[in-house]
Length: 308
Length: 253
Ligand SMILES: Cc1cc2nc3c(=O)[nH]c(=O)nc-3n(C[C@H](O)[C@H](O)[C@H](O)COP(=O)(O)OP(=O)(O)OC[C@H]3O[C@@H](n4cnc5c(N)ncnc54)[C@H](O)[C@@H]3O)c2cc1C
Ligand SMILES: Cc1cc2nc3c(=O)[nH]c(=O)nc-3n(C[C@H](O)[C@H](O)[C@H](O)COP(=O)(O)O)c2cc1C
Ligand code: FES
Image (cartoon, rainbow over all chains, first blue to last red):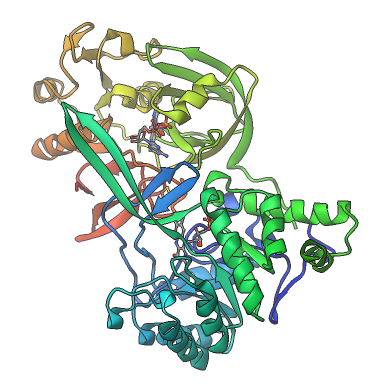
C-alpha cells in the first residue's frame, strides 16, 4: 500500500506535508536511522534530536528508566551540534527524500537566534524551538514556562528566520493558553504540544536491612501522558489561530483521531518508536485505510467530522 | 512508496522453549535472519505491555533458528518464559558489534547468564580451530543451564565444579594458560576486574557491557557509557558502538 493520492495532505500554515504523522524529537535520531525498519520517507516529517550550537555530551548518571506506562529520560540534550548536523546529516536527509524539522535548543536568546540564522542561511525549511531549556540569564526558569521570556525568545528567532517556525510547548505550566498565545503573538507559524512532563522514579533495593536507591529525575513520556497532552491541545485550540501539532503517548490510530478531535492538525510520535520501530509508518497506512474505508474524501473531511 | 520489507523487525515463531536450569530458559526462534550473526550481537524482544524491548544476546544460530538463553528476572522475562511453541514473538535485530574474533589463544569467561554469548563465541572459535578455554561461574549447581558446556565451572557455594567465582583464581589460571586474548561477559565487577588484570598482564580484553536500553539502535542515547578515544573521553552507545568494548577503553563510573 502506498500513500499516492494525496488524501493525507496536511497544510501547516503553508508548510505542506504528505501526511500528518511525524516523529518526535529525541526519539528518531537525525535522519534515516530507522530505515532498518521502515522507509522513513513515508512519514510526514521527522523532527530531529534537539540540536545546539556546539556538540553536547549530555548527562552522566542513569539516563532512562521504564515506568508503568512509558519512561523517564534524562539524556541532557546530548547531540552532535549544528555544524556536524549540517555537514553529515542534511545530505542523508536529502538523499533519502526525508522531510524534516530541526529541533533547536539553547540556553540564551542569542544561542537560539544564532541557530536560527545558521538554519536560515542553510535553507532549512522548518524548525521547532525546544523551549524546555533553562534560561541562563534568569536563573533556572525555563523559557517555555514564562510568557514574557517566551515572547522575547520567539520574536527574536522570528526576526532571523523566515521558514516554518514551530514552538514546542512544555506542559509544566499553570496556563498553557497564555504561553501558546505568547508564541502566536511573537509570530510562530504553529505550536507543538506537549514536551515531557517532569517525573521522578525511585527504585528501592533492600540489602541486609539497608536501602539502596536508584533515582532518575527527568522527562516523563509515553502512553501515560496522553490525557495531559489531549488536555493541552484542547485548551490551546480554543485560544489559538495557528495550527497545533499534538504530541504525547500516541500508540494507536485511535490516539491520533482523539488528537484531531481535540484540535490538532498533525501529530508526532515519540516513545512508541522505541517499542515498535515501525509504528509511525504503520499509522500512516492505517490512517489512509481508515479514511477510505469510512468513506471520507480526505483527511480534511475526517478532521471536520471529528470536530463536529 | 514502500520498498522492500525491512530486515530488522520480525514477527517470528517460537520453535522451541525449554527450561534449562532452576531459573533459566532456552528459546529458539524461527527467524528470517539469514545473515551471519557474530557472538555478542543481540536481538530485542517486545514484551506485552512493556515500553522497553528487552535485549538478549544470541546464544545459537543454526538452520535459520536463533537461540536465546535467558534468566528469569522481572516482567519481561516472565512474559517470554510464558510463550509456547508456535506462538508469535516480535523481535528486532540483530544489533551491536559483537566480539571481534582473533586468531589467538583465547580465554573465555562467562559469569552467570553472561555464559550465553560466551558459549556462542566458543562454538565460533572451535569452528575456526582457535585454541580456547571457557570458564563459567554460577551461584549454585541448580542455576547451571544444561546447554552450557564449560571447560572449568565455578559455583559460589561449591555445589558443582570449583568453589568460588570466575575471578577467584583467575590470575593463576592466566599464568598457567597464557592466553593472548580474553573475552568476558558478566556483571560489571567481573568486567572491571578482568579489564584491570588484562592491563596488568598486557593481554587484550574484549568485554560485553550491559545497559538498560530503549531504542537498541543508538538514537535515544539512553545506554551510553564513557570510553577513551584518541586521548579524549567520549560517549559510546552500548547498543550500537558496543555491546563489546575493549577492556582498556571503558571508563568506569
Ligand atoms: C546487550 C545485552 C545482552 C543481554 N543478553 C542477555 C542474555 O543473553 N540472557 C539474559 O538472560 N539476559 C541478557 N541481558 C539482560 C536482559 O536484557 C535483562 O535481564 C532483561 O531486560 C530483564 O527484563 P525483565 O523485565 O525480566 O526484568 P526487569 O524487572 O525489567 O529488570 C531486571 C534487571 O534487568 C536489567 N534490565 C531491565 N531492562 C533492561 C533493558 N531494556 N536492557 C538491558 N537491561 C535491562 C536491569 O539491570 C534490571 O535491574 C542482556 C542485556 C543486554 C543489554
Ligand atoms: C529519550 C527522549 C529524548 C527526547 N529528546 C527531546 C529533545 O531533544 N527535544 C525535544 O524537544 N523533545 C525531546 N523529547 C520529547 C519528545 O519529543 C516528546 O515531546 C515526548 O516524548 C512526548 O511524546 P511521547 O509520549 O510520544 O513520547 C524526548 C523524549 C524522549 C523519550
Ligand atoms: S538504547 Fe538507545 S542509544 Fe542505546
